Amino acid sequence: VMPVSSYALSLDRLIIWSNGKPWMLISPTNRADFIKQLNQALPKGIQVLSARELQGKVLPLMAAIQVVEYQAVLPSDLADDLEQRVSWFEQQTEVFYLRKRPKKKDKQVNVRESVLFLQGEKTAEAYRLTMRLAFTETGSAKPSEVLAVLLEEKHCPEVEWLRTGMWVRQPDGALQTP
Image (tube, rainbow, N blue to C red; front, side, top):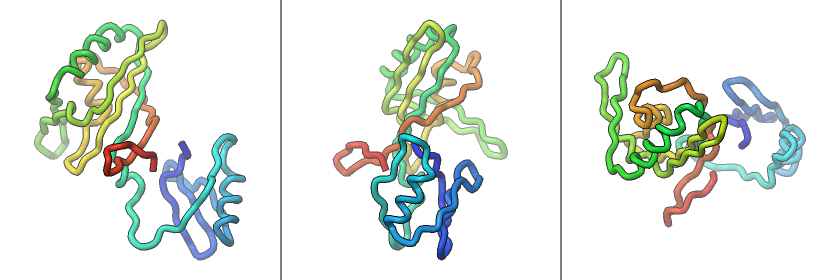
């Protein structure tokens, strides 16, 4: 996954941003030159194969994303509880989480409707939790909210979530990387 979050185009140069900071500046003269300059700057193993200019109003990439996969590694002492709770969660049609919102009224969120896939993997050292969440016009559950429900909000540890995939839905329902 390329760490590009946005770009800015100025007459003769392209600035690519990552994590809120300028990541790369290139000055292509044509499409082939653009691909060549970008490939020279990319990490080994990542390559741009083609590029095209988008005309008119274009949605930001994150606005088009409809499904995101997250993964977290949790302490192994939570594995037994999580295995049981993942199994329980998959059998439910509704699972609510109370989303606390500063300066607004708290809101009950049905996190179950956002979860398309939920799987845990137990190892000797840790428990790897993977989930795919759907993003809709009405919103989505956050990975931390799903984890809080799974752990019954007992001792929800601070977890670093890794985004491992992003997709848009095709008319036939199939997922496609953008």
